Length: 101
Image 1 (cartoon, helix red, strand yellow):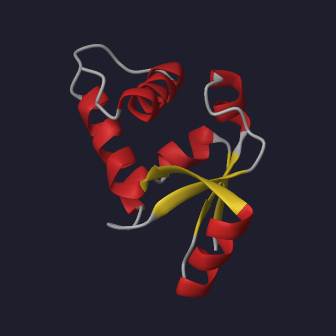
Image 2 (image 1 turned 135 degrees about the vertical axis):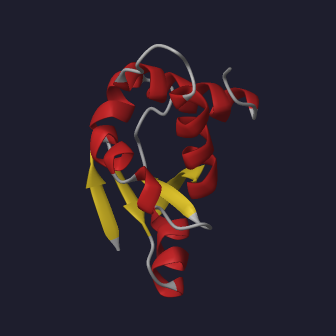
């Protein structure tokens, strides 16, 4: 299991995320709140057993390749992105099943 303390830590490692699988978040986190997302703990399963356990005890946040794509799309913008831009991109994707351009 790999745990990231906060969204910034997750972003710092985004290019090392697995090509498949989910980023999990603790239950009870308000995934529509930028502040909650910024401070949450994020979990990656490294074994099938952990994946099954997380599916029962945690909440899916976003698929790993989707998060990589969200970051990649936002990084193509001419202006430097802030943490809130990346969080907003994830929230938009979760709500609309589409990327924020």
